[in-house]
Length: 368
Image 1 (cartoon, rainbow, N blue to C red):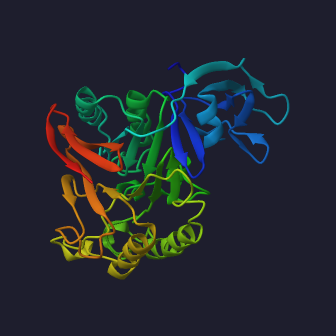
Image 2 (spheres, rainbow, N blue to C red):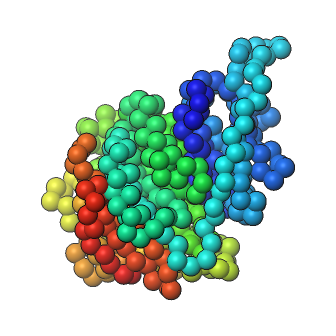
Image 3 (cartoon, one colour):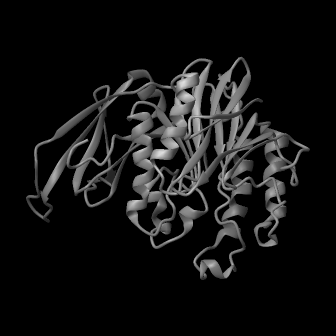
């Protein structure tokens, strides 16, 4: 972009809002203008400057209606208690294309582990055959870990290459995102709702719920070195799902909902891993699955984590804990060499899923 912005903005769908997030190279003040209104990156009335990624929250309905936004920043010369010095404002305008109607396309990327080019190539394979997408899905482990803040740049570099700041993104955290010195600050670099990495979203007629299994082994596993507390985090999501069900009229039963999705990095409905240490939290995951299946009735669940491609219906291979709907495990990879992801088209009450890879191949297609 320029010497201040690292990439184009990423427009993340969270609840009934968009979080427009922009990574930067140096301290600056930032806001966005939408339809004559200003939405700033501020904290209790103070514009933030000494941060790596700016976040401006805009109501979804408003940005959808206006269809464009302008990112404005002032580069800080020196921030002082009195008479702070900053440069003149710099503006970049972006068109925005909301998700509308039927025939909506999306592309699912998980487990890119710091790769940028290969996931983009897999996406390009889908676009060449099926046309442009309307939104992008990130489903965990986009950085290889949280050991360095530069790893989070992977998220924004892929988003820039695919969306150019013009279409929305849905984001889910992965287990590798929980590892490293900056793991407790992931919510500073990525979208969240009140700091939580689980929430719902709506894009046109598509409603979704994002769940977060966190790590993939017990908290006591020596790999974590006493740094995680995931059991209670998973338990809290039982109440979260129950609250979503209680608010069904404003969530998945609100007018215009044509499709319902579940996004989670880990396919929690299965416990068939050959290593028992990965088969954790069966009771919690059974309850998650039961609440989803008996109340929300989702159409599709998208996961990654296993580094392979698979489609499983209830009662089939990946259903050990009460799979609530058809499961698509939509990412496969070889570090630095290969990537495969999943394209989706929501049309005529069905979801057509196509698995494509970085070598230009269509691996398979399925209809949900």
